[in-house]
Amino acid sequence: MEHWEALCPGGYRFVYDDALFRPGTDTFLLSSLPRLKPGLRMMDLGCGTGLLGLLLLQRQPGLAITGVDIQPAAIRLAEKAAVENGLTDRLSFLAADLRNVKALFPTGSFDLAVCNPPYYPCASGALSGDSARRTARSEVDCSLEDICRAASHLLRWGGSFCLVHKPERLTDLLCALREHGLEPKRLRFVCKTAGSAPSLVLAEARRGGRPGLTIEEPLILQTADGAPSAEVDAIYFRQQEETP
Image (tube, rainbow, N blue to C red):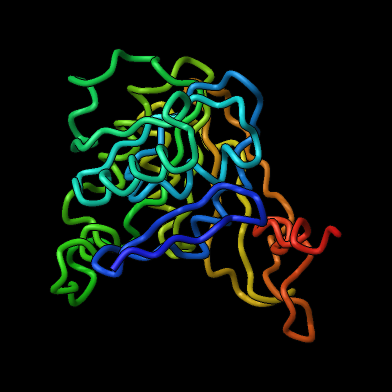
C-alpha cells in the first residue's frame, strides 16, 4: 500500500510503499550533511522512492537531481512524487544498476553524489526473504566498493560524495573511498544521547581532495529527558510546524 506524507506544512510530499524498504531516520540525517548551493548537479545512488532528493530540494530548491535505483517499483514511485510536487524539471530518475553508470553517464557529470547504502555484507548474517528489503539492507546487488567506484566516475574533480554508514564499518568505508580517489574530508558521528556510543556515521569525501580529515561534533538525537534535540527538529522541519 502507498503512503503519502508531507516533509513539513506546505512542503514537498514523499511517498513510500509497504512492499518496499520504508524511509528511515538515516535518510533524514544524511540530508543534513551536504553543503548545498544553487546550480549543483547531484546524483542520488540507490535513490529508492526519492525521499533524499526531496529533502535536499526542500532545503535548496536550485538543485538538479538525478536518482538511480535497481528497483523499478521504487523508481515508479519516485517519478510519481516528482510529478506530484511539480519537480520534473529538477528531479529525474532512472531504473538502472549503479554498477553500470560508466555506460550511462560521462565521467565528471555531477558536482555532488549522495548515497544511503546497504550496510551489511552478504556474509554477515541471515538475509531478509523479501527482495526489496534485502537489496536495501545487504550488499547483495552492490558492495561498498561498487558504490565508491560509481561515485568516483560520476563526480567532477573536486566534487563531493556524502553518505551514511555504520560505525563498525568505518575502516571499510575510509579504505574504499580512498582506493577510488575519494579523499575523506569530514566525519560526523550520530549518537542517541550525549556520551553514548555512535549508531551511525555521516561521511563526506572529495574526488581528488588532499589528505586532511575533520571530525565534527556528534549529532545528538535526544536530550537528557528523551526529547528530540533542536538539531533533529530542524532536520525534520519541525521548527516550521511551530511557526504561526
